[in-house]
Amino acid sequence: MPLVSPVELATYLQQPVSEAVALSVIRVATGWLQAATGVTVWPEPTPDDLWAWTLELAAMAHANPAGAQSQEAGVIIHTWGERREQILEDAKGAYGSGQAPKGCFPPALPWPADSLLYW
Image (cartoon, rainbow, N blue to C red; front, side, top):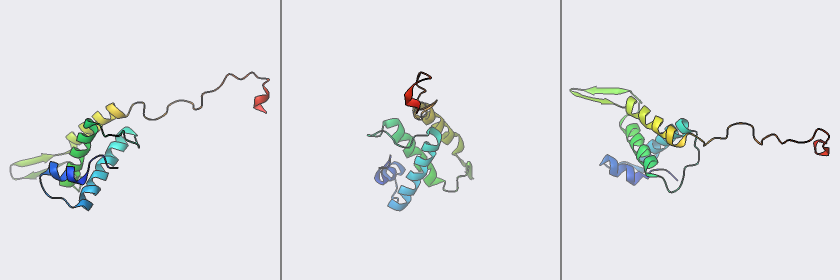
């Protein structure tokens, strides 16, 4: 299940968006979050912070499909790179720690050297 629905994205953007486009940019946003955090299975229901980050990242992907860092149009300058990195860093801090196993699994057991369990 996507972290954000196509309807929620269209509402946030305040414009109609085809379902195919919405699902594509939501997948892009989810991919960015997965790469930053290492999480592949998200909590359900979606926490508000994760929902907001996904929505904002999807809006960035929608407005900037080429992935440019900034765009200048007359006196208006759009920058995406800094905000995107801030979101991903926040998500990594919130969801990236403790999500992937670390260390030796299973842990080494203290078997006696003459144990028959080795054979």
